[in-house]
Image (cartoon, rainbow, N blue to C red; front, top):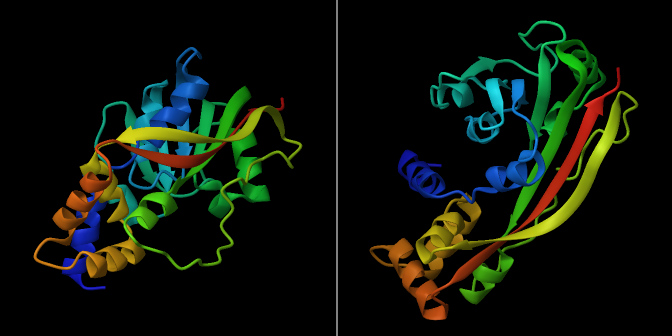
Length: 237
């Protein structure tokens, strides 16, 4: 992947992301008192951590990728660490909420559970959530058909098979978000596979602008659907 090509996709990715972290957390943590100390495991560039910050007085984000941590935005209430969930740089019994936003599939292990039991307060909340943006319909309206690829990734993975956690809420639902034409186009162009198909279909000096015009011809209002997966537990004392 050339640097110019990578930058083009990154530009679209940065321009608009559906606020699904905020939607999911507000629906499930919105009525809780503010947590004292939160921990976001597998925080990436900090998007999920920033969404969680609204519900915590202080917050730590951990990710094994140095490059991801380097892209996080500084915040007085958030501290980021290069590391993993098996070695959390926090004291015993200090954390009262932990989140895994699309990261548990990579992090789940016996050692992780042991570390959560160490670092969490009694009855701390552990939140696991993920989402999959469904773009088949808008792509099909534009005449784009993506090839299906197999993946071992599990959006629904959680801790329901682990005795260390008591389930409070576990569900899957499809949500809808209204978006502008430009926002929808940015989402469509933010994947390398979709980007190639779209540039081929809307060739010219500005494939993105051409795609936006095509979307406007279809409708002035657009909706993005996403499958969301959520599970919340308490650590057993």
